[in-house]
Structure formats: structure tokens, C-alpha cells
Length: 187
Length: 120
Image (cartoon, rainbow over the protein chains, first blue to last red):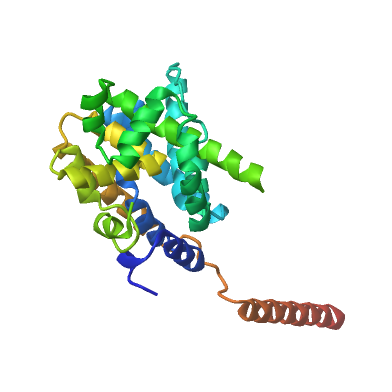
């Protein structure tokens, strides 16, 4: 077994379930503090509240893990922090518009996708790109084919940063759906 | 992303290099590295949300301090929870032995009490 810093999440989880030692969970969670705090900041937009949210998530994980068999730790954690933040906002009476409620499961799907499937999809991509909206097509082409950064796309297209990110994210998702439909249709 | 760039951006545990992400937020990366980070952001909703949240923070230097604080608290919590569940009997054999001895003692005690009541 490799040293803890070289272990992947799965190996750490296995050690945790085997030893029932919360220190493994502590080490695993530390890898995600950055992401957890970032997501909390995105939703709560307040430093202290975001710090509290991360600690609440830590606590929830420490309580839930012995009772739950978690396979995709990263996706599970993402779901927990998002739900926690949304509940906090709901308690404050704030409505949050979530563009993609299936983000966590989308992450999970990406983890499950085999390389072969990805290659197949890449071959079909050129056809599917044409089915995107003009804005999505522009941003996807600039980002993936011309390898432009977000800032460069902003400068070239006149869209703002949020629009660029959104066109890429949504375009990518639509592209994936189109490709999957095509692949299913062929089978 | 090609394998080479993955090696640059990921640690041996398969995680994205946190320092690289901090450098991205502080605008310290080269154009190629910026593109690599952004590509990873499109691949993970978790990372994308986090970077969005952190990019709104005016004082980026605070992030490292906050992470250190949160990690220290987590460490205290998990140290305390070390082996929270300690079974009284570590294995089935010990448990069986203890149960047998207890039954034997109870039977002996019962027998002695019965004998004593008979003699009286």
C-alpha cells in the first residue's frame, strides 16, 4: 500500500472502512477543503458563513460515513456541500436558480465513462457541434478546438466571463447528450 | 487534456495541484497553464463552482489562511474520533468464552444457593 499522500481516494476509503479510523477520513477530506470552501463561497458569498458550512459538511461526513458505503466520494461530497448551502439559502428565504441540478450525477457519470466511449463520442463530435446554438458553437469551438482561454474568448466574442463559462458548460452538456443520442440510435 | 498536462497539473494521488489553482486565481500562470486549469474546470462541476466562488474573494491571500484554519480544526476532530468504536470483546472467540464462564458461574452459584437452602 502506498504512503497516504500517494494514495488515491478509493485506497483511502478502503483504509477507512477497514480500520474504522477517522484519521483516514480526515486526510481524505483535507484534499477537498479547497473545493468545499470554494463552493460554499459561491453560494453563500460570505466568508464566515462559508467557513461554517465547510465545518458542518466535515461533521456530516464524519457522522454519515460509518453508516454509508460511499463509492464515488468526490461526487457524494459535492452533493452534500451543494445541498447544505442551498438549505442555508432556503432558510434565509433566498431562491437559487440552479442551471443544472444533475451536476453531481454528471460528475459521477464522467467518472464512469470508459475511454472507449469517449473516443467514440469524439468521432461524432463534429456532426453534433452543428446542432448547438450559435453562441455555444462559437465558445465550444474556440475553447476546445482553438484552445483559447476564457479571457481570450471574452475578448474575441464580446460575451462576458459568466456567459462564456455558461456557453461552454451548457454547450458541452448538449454536445454530450447529442452524441449519446446518436450512439444509442446506431446501436 | 493530454497525459503530459495531467502529470503537470495532478499530484500522485490524482488530485489537482492546489497551488496551481491558487496561482490561477492570482493570475500567475502562463497562458498554457490557464487553459489547462480551465479545461479541468469544464470537466468537473465541483471544481468549476469552487473556482467561481473563490474568484469572487477580493483578498486571495486569505484563502490559504482559511484553509489552514479549517484543516487544523478538522485534524483535531478526527484525532478525537480515532477509534471511536472500541468493541469490548475484540473477537468472537473471546465473547464466547466470556459467555460460557458467566453461565458456568451462574449455574454454580445457583447450585450452591440450592444446597444451602436444603441444609437449612
